[in-house]
Length: 301
Image (tube, rainbow, N blue to C red; front, side):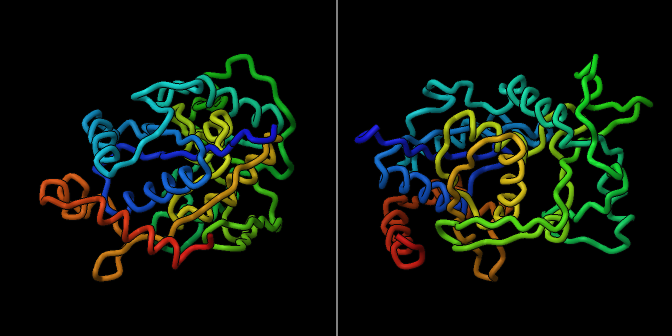
């Protein structure tokens, strides 16, 4: 296939608030990488959080990305061969991927809440990273492949009617290594740096790790550009790729942007939201020139 460019990147914002300057830089890098490779860029609306996603944030997301000067070839606003591009409309595909994991014995049901996990660990846990699961519901041996007669019910209820999350059983002690395009060589140990993680939630919605792997694979993404806070998630996702027999994409984790106090930018930083910056008369072309110089100095070519 000489002469055919197969690079496929993606923008994958979650409409749980207005995009801020840190999002802008990461998405600009993803756009820039796709342009460097003369590739295809996909916009995917990751709207699985039913409680926090809002239609107005979806509208603002597209408007803000366009205002930044970014463009894409596939997405919810322009269609494409891998539609739908709203993650909430891809439920049947997510179910099929989950059932593949369940039928192969890679996952098991868990009745533990986050509070239960923290109490079992006997120590406080700070930050957004999920704590290492202590194995309360983990079977002693890897579950045998199972066939269920009512798969929809058993995705979120056990035989006793209790609500369950489904966890992926990690291979304790296995080292997961990968070469990140921005952060360099990475190594994590399953069972130490992260434990058995949720892939399907009790409200019958896929967890982030499963949904992202399923959709990046289905959409043929060859490089994932995202924030450095997701490096550990990449280790989990590589295990899912292996369990599903899929080839993973390359990864490029961009350093996070911080405020003047060194605090990572979040959607609560209203003054640095792209909405507020637009209203204040900011000019994104100036950021692009600054980010291009930063990219050349900070990250490998």
